[in-house]
Image (cartoon, rainbow, N blue to C red; front, side, top):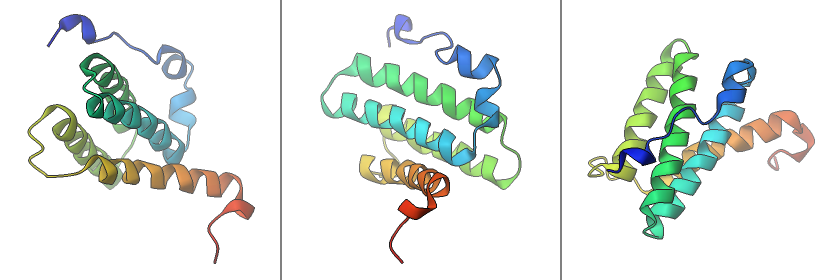
Length: 124
């Protein structure tokens, strides 16, 4: 792997001003899911550079989320990180699909939107 593709901190602003720590978990996971979508797209298109860049950005967000999340949720996030890496750059030992991984994060993004705008939530 080309070491030039391992970036320094990408999300400096949201980390330094405390914005990320104040975000609800659902919003954080939605943002991480955006990077996963970009990484999947790069993988599907055989664009290693863009896949790796999105992977590093996603891991940066995920690692910071893990660092500021206590309790059992932290263990879940560590497992998600493992699945994310295994799917994109590992041997996919867990046999997860990109769609399954994306759905996990999309559910958080939807929950965040429904909490912000309850009238736009799912039909009962």
